[in-house]
Length: 96
Image 1 (cartoon, rainbow, N blue to C red):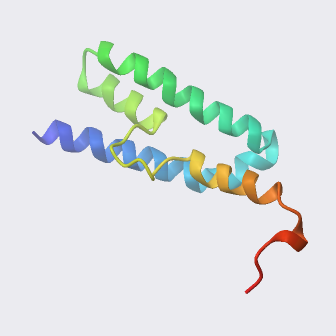
Image 2: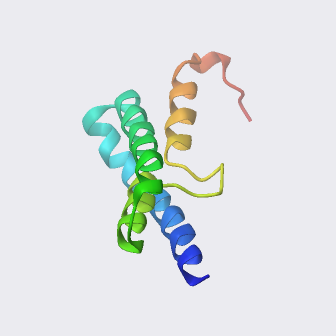
Image 3: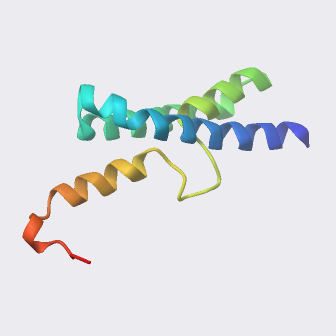
């Protein structure tokens, strides 16, 4: 039972780590490319996870791929919001 908690915690920790690193990395490779990288990492981790033989390899796959049960916790979210915001002209944005 403790291993399940560890795996779930590592997935959230990985997502949190990538969210903190996103502003730094997006300046280097761009938002669109970083969104593709995060999505590929998640896909690769999803395919590798069932074949993991040890808890260590499963932990690494979950952490790097940011796999979690929380659909609203993923490093792609801030990038998607920033990309959408950039597509709207400043005069068309809602002002408070």
